[in-house]
Amino acid sequence: MTTTGEESAQWKTVEGPGRSRAKLIRALVALGVILAALGFVLFKGATNSLEYFLTVQQANAARAKLGDTSFRMEGVVVPGSVDPTPAGVDFTIRYNHAEDRVTEIGNPPELFQPSIPVVIQGHFQGNVFVSSLIEVKHSSNYVAEHPSRIKNAGGTTS
Image (cartoon, rainbow, N blue to C red; front, side):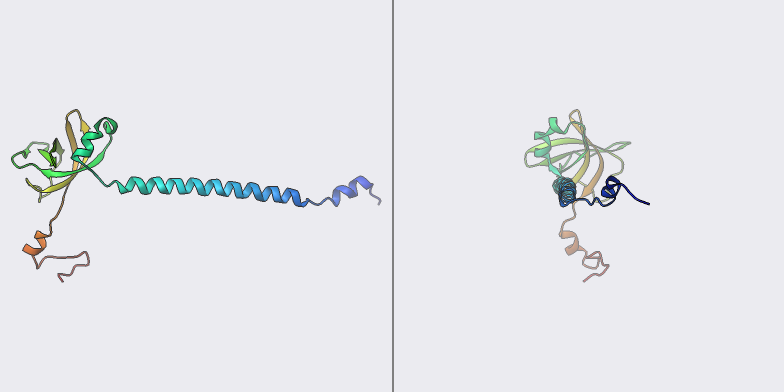
């Protein structure tokens, strides 16, 4: 059986070096775009997680920008401001000379009291910060006053 010259030419056609180089360049560009996107996502995640909480002053300065988004705010519970309610507790938080009224929905932690540093999580609703979580900052005085209590997460007292 004989073949025509055209059929044998198609059968012997081999991809030239220019085509494989173009494919390699496209693959490298695609890989570069994927790596850049991944780097951007990691960078944004790291920078967002670094802002652990705002002080009362910072939150008040950014109140319009924050709107009703949830965030964490640090301050000290103002003495004489704690008022238990059926839903939780109302109190005032202060950082330097800035203050905000807080309505906590739920039970505050046992160590919650006036003059103690706290971090609260919630959002502004009008002139009030509505909180769904109070975290009490423990002082080093607790360890000094209770030396037999657990000092580290491993469960030892030494």
